[in-house]
Image (tube, rainbow, N blue to C red; front, side, top):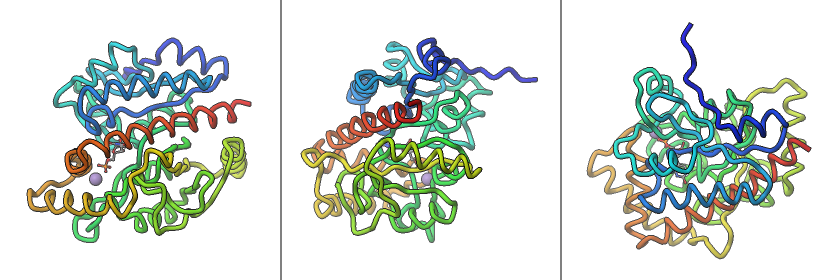
Length: 303
Ligand code: PSU
Ligand code: MN
């Protein structure tokens, strides 16, 4: 039997054993989603917000082959500085563990690790989805099928607006994944509070989300759900303004032949440049906002 190189941080293990609220956090956002040193500051601030709301944060990553559920401050900072970290999803999480590699976990890989550790809720920025032009590239994130398979509530600001949002919603529906607008009946669009697309479901309280997930479990329906929590109004960039930056970044990605795992990091980094850093400030604000809601949901789940 292969021993699983899984390290659950002592404070996380204790909180789980005492059935206190725990919120998982992903790390691709640290290794591939934001530049240093903003990534390190964001990762620390988000953990502090979760603690301030009475829950224990568990940032998940693979460090030299060990799957870490909960990083110390120095591990977090080391990860934020790592160049050439892998971007790990369902397909290659175990590869990194078998070869001693270091990598950030995407939404999909973070869900796998969270479920394994017994963590029921997780906060991110925006999930991966169906890319624009997917009818040619077939680029559809493994985050979508993971949401169908793994029972973790993922709190996001929607699907990233670089994606084809209606196609992403269709794939989620096909796979039986509930998409819940938090106190909104329109799908948020990551950097912007709204989009032209209705939210499939709406719930206005953390307790309501906890009741919905409990009812799904009682019915024997497996899998997770996606919460779409709009970025605070004071931090948003209007969708009309973002559309131009997104189109420009997309055209550059195509011209440079960027494909596969590199697409999302390329687009996010280009959009930070095109907006003069504003999109990064908004991205950080929306992750913090999602961390707050995730802590409330975690508390409602343990109540
Ligand atoms: N949210 C952010 N920034 C990110 C991500 C989410 O604010 O970089 C990451 C997540 O880890 C998500 C990944 O799983 O982007 C999607 O990558 P892809 O499109 O290649 O599946
Ligand atoms: Mn992809």
